[in-house]
Image (cartoon, rainbow, N blue to C red):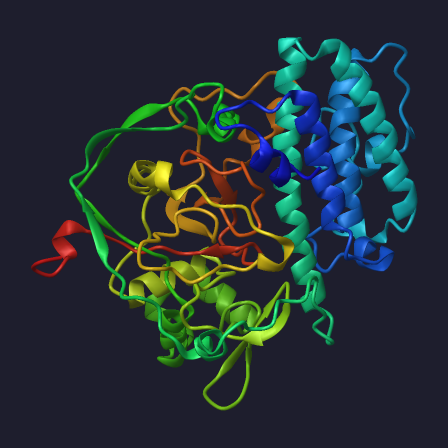
Length: 448
């Protein structure tokens, strides 16, 4: 049973048992590679992406290295060489295979990696039956499952980049045919009007607030989401939906990529060096029209859908062109937190891995695109990384990165919450990243 099915069929407010959740999350990863060939699973399209086979092996390595090696009686590794091959960035664990060369690992084969997963899962099942009540085991396995859910999203984003590198523009899963005339004409339909919601600001709390343990989505948090602390917010306004393709297309066609006054200095250098003229995955179509590559293949660019795959530099330049700015992460969390109870994303099938347009009542806080903020990724006051190797999980990356908030159409079910802090360098655009505009209240016209 896949993780979304487990969560959907669990009684309201029920905690899914750890053993059941373990196998559901692990099975979901296998489901993601079902449409792929062994060749699809081995290739690497750029240094920042990883082959699907490597993701499957690395997430297994996590449980073997951090759980089985510590608690399994008479532990023996599946293969001694895997400790180095599938270590990502845990320097305290030992040597690592270079990240840009993961696509060169034609051995072990995909079949052997699947056997590796199967054996580790069987051993983990036995261990969890015996130690499921051990608090340390519970905490570490839960972290490992959250870690695997992160890699499930990365598998999709990395695969999308890989398929786009193929001149045939193959689809991961065929997008369903339009069901009605309105959808056929949807490429030219504009998004609903964008409005700004006003907030008085003041002294507010942000950071993870541990909820009742019967709440799967909010009981867990990564260490970088804590401690919860107070921040002062000046009065601000934040958009009630994401920026749309149509709005961003106006920026492109207005020469936004050719105006250095709109760009940060490093952003302008990045744009010039790679000759960026539009977002990643956009392609010119018929005169005056655009196409966009999706996991469902090449599709007409739909104006009403939120613009995706932007770098921080592109998001910041658009905000400046639009007479606005990016929100801070504290503003974002303060605004989104109030809507969390109503905004939790629904479950999506494999043919819906694409951001959708905003209906009248939808604010798109979660489940469409990660949203850039203007906040540098740094430690909260009082933050301390966990002792040991797992302390390398987040804290060591708190430099030269920006925070993104929300979740995306590729984020697994149950893996979103208002306090979640995603982070990437300013040039990253292969993730499902978009933007939401913000303003100071003093910048709003009379009447909002």
